[in-house]
Length: 286
Image 1 (cartoon, one colour):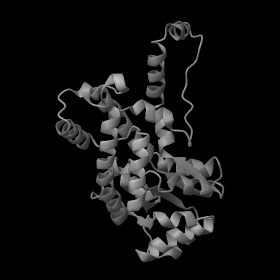
Image 2 (image 1 turned 120 degrees about the horizontal axis):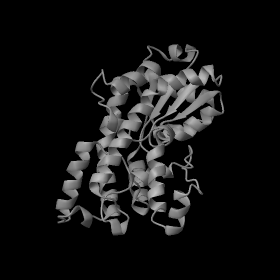
Image 3 (image 1 turned 120 degrees about the vertical axis):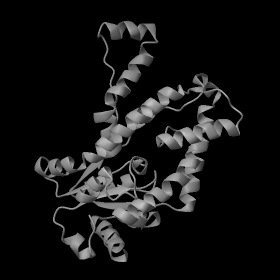
Image 4 (image 1 turned 90 degrees about the horizontal axis):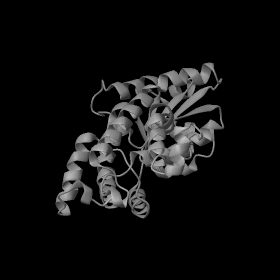
């Protein structure tokens, strides 16, 4: 949704906002705050991990359990039940399933398997984003919420073309919600890199970008075999490449489909009215 004035936005009787941006900019913080003020909180990552990748995640748990003779016998006799306890606050099951490519002795997975899981995540994320209109309707008709906030994942920009005004995902989101990009700061980017170095985690890459960076990393480190790659080493190096790759994509989404606000303004949002002021200012500035 695009508005000529902030008054149009404020007069919108059933508001729907999709919040997007890099990890740690405050998307979930805003969504949690609004949830307590008659806004339905839709988490894209939670939807991916439950509806679209839940079975893959649980099957992976079972594969690992089958390697333990005690658990294998119990599983084959249906004596135990294995499930994923994914929540809005704990998305570790999804992250663990994606994994990191490289040396299996260091916790890595085969590159071909890694790419297969990346493709599954891409399909799941696209589907979860396209589910937004249905959940806007469900949030009102079933649960009685007046407004809706979509807490998008950090990889939204990787599954769309921000320069294509007919992109099906962005068109779906923009037709049904206001897109609000929270722009990080250079200090935030440095903090993300440092945090990632201490605890590398799986990430989603565009297929072509992944192939390019995988080959580049092996060349820089004189590695010939995929199984020789240190999973954490590639994860940290790849994350820095990913940061620089994603920023212009998000900026283009905001320019072509929505609005942008500064990350430093988010901590000042303490109430629903503060949030409406934040969005209103972005609309009027645009």
